[in-house]
Length: 384
Ligand SMILES: Cc1cc2nc3c(=O)[nH]c(=O)nc-3n(C[C@H](O)[C@H](O)[C@H](O)COP(=O)(O)OP(=O)(O)OC[C@H]3O[C@@H](n4cnc5c(N)ncnc54)[C@H](O)[C@@H]3O)c2cc1C
Image 1 (tube, protein in one colour):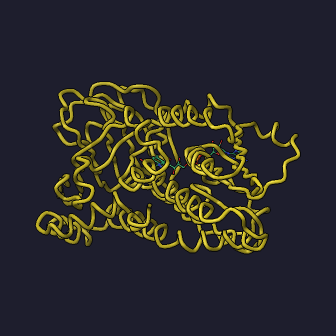
Image 2 (cartoon, protein in one colour):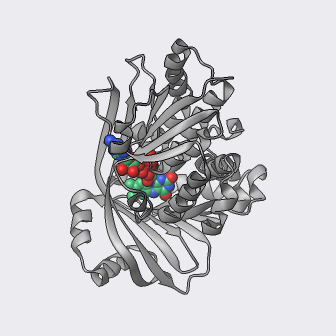
């Protein structure tokens, strides 16, 4: 009989939790842990835009149908630039044929719904053990592999010799939900402004998640506003057709950064996954989708053969970092370029901004490349 492997997953955010469900299909025990309790892990006021690459991954791990009741699809993506007063609307007709039939460009899901469904699935798995860090430290388990999914800024660099790149945008995101009167469209918005992008993700017919990027100082000032003043402030920067009603729930602030951590100098049995491996600017909503493509890669590598020799177990991480590089580099390049190009006060760039929208509005091939890269990613065809 083949030996059952013991895997430890440190960090039970959306990356760690999907990784545990994916690896539970293999001949292994999974010890999942977090500093937070299950309730605190579920009850976070966050929202994610979900792409077609993620849809494929969630179908593969039998989660798509379970999450479907909580997903709100959008069939139009409006991209505009307030400086050059240009805009374009990308629609499902701009999608590649293979995904057009799904009738959505992307979906939006609340963190709490996502985590609730995933924890329900974990409870059904006999080989996933969710324990506190303290409980796990008291058990003498020999782990065959450790996966670190502890999020951005959480990895202790003393333990992992890193090749580490980090860029702070000196920006933060203000996030909150808002109801909008008279809205009937299933449309998401990305509005490029001098101070940074402003995204509106539809959560229901009249409910939107706002992700408002600005300098950290300005975001902190806005965080202190009373909700009515914040609505007034937002209405001055949104197109006139938006009739803002009221803010629902809390207003939160998140720092934004671009980072890449590569702990390649040590031959050990551990891998960084998700935000502990890379972070991006939230423009385009690529973060979690890329984290889950890490999970997909890890599953594929371990699914091929679990009976690794010691050396293979140690070497597998190089294969993982190497094969993930192109996808991650593409996302880094695109998100960073968008911020440099559009969140910019330089007047010389205005004609180039106008030209880019002119091209988008007049050439189907360019619209297709932009939209399909955003929602499918460069590795779509390799997700099996
Ligand atoms: C404003 C904003 C908007 C975003 N919008 C989108 C979007 O629309 N679409 C999208 O795809 N992505 C989006 N993202 C990115 C997305 O939120 C992240 O990529 C995602 O949350 C990363 O998940 P994770 O599980 O890797 O990390 P996290 O969600 O940070 O989870 C890490 C977990 O590890 C735990 N932990 C930390 N240290 C330890 C330790 N020492 N021991 C045990 N546990 C530990 C933490 O408690 C936490 O539960 C957005 C990000 C921001 C900031």
